[in-house]
Image 1 (cartoon, rainbow, N blue to C red):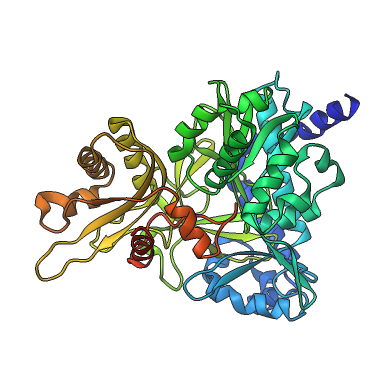
Image 2 (tube, rainbow, N blue to C red):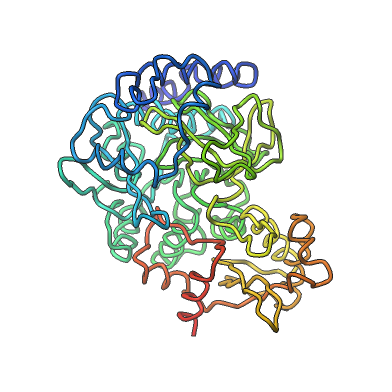
Length: 502
């Protein structure tokens, strides 16, 4: 009990009062943070290249330092991995988080510095617990353990540095006491064979006192269904009666909420979204009644927000925290204590509130459909799918969508491949509701659909059971750090799925 009480005190150490000041001092916090980052990196190779010592304000910073995606940043990574020191952050970078690559790179290797671990990733994890305990002071969360489903890659040593999923790096560097509140053991959670991991995680956790879950909703759902099947139970509360919280992130939770409600067994489960990526820990859902997440401004991350009309320009116009507006889609660029400088992370966000600054993840800069000028983003897609499910009684397991390009005889349209957990009573009604919802949510889509002149109604292709699991397995993408591509501006994914669906 003494250990539990000390943990509760640790998680509540003064951070909540600091978080409360964000709304008033957001621009000051961010400006001071940028000066600190510039000063610390002034003697690095990148700091000398752009003369960080002479940059005294945000305007000069934006004018002088170029904005980079991973392809632009990769030469710096390669030099760091070859053993060069003091490149984009002081010292030698030992750890690199491996994640799925862009069109130009099979994999991305994001540097993870000790500063980023301590001041960003671990700080974010502590704040998640602090915020939750503030919202639910009667919680018994820390009396039990958190079932954590990490990625499926072991750490690999290459040329003197280590690569692996972010989850593997975090577990490897976690303080010793984290093992008292997390399960299963690191050697199980990081197994790289998915089927073996399912069974071993099940054996290791089904008799534990699990009070919380943490992971990507899609992959964790597969694990939880496996545990229910293995134990013969009908819901999770029969296995873990003290289960109270699911901390989720990585993908939109909306398509999975209904399934989680059904397998938990009671209505009093709490859900909490976080925005944690290889590049940093960015936001936390601070209010259980509001799905938007509080942007964390003092984790060693300086934010810039790029209006979509500016994306792709060599020196795009950006907005700082005091210049953003609500309900506008921005590509997010970050400068961090991990040695990233004006780095385009690939996500698009939308502010729901400016007092305090709260965001939702609206999509990916490369995962959208704009084959006909419709500018369909993931947020539009998932809200429309939710409406279609509610109207037709359907429940979706996985989906992906892409364009059907027009030819001399046919108009263009969108094709959706959907694997249902519960099929709609009428697939045509589902398609009509989806189409109508998309038009209501997206004026560009509505304009292109007007009169069926440019864009024809969507095509819904029903995927067989297990289609997406088999597809991800075929692509060697099984595991908690891999995500099903939701939208694409080409037919690469759709054609692969159609072939496998035969």
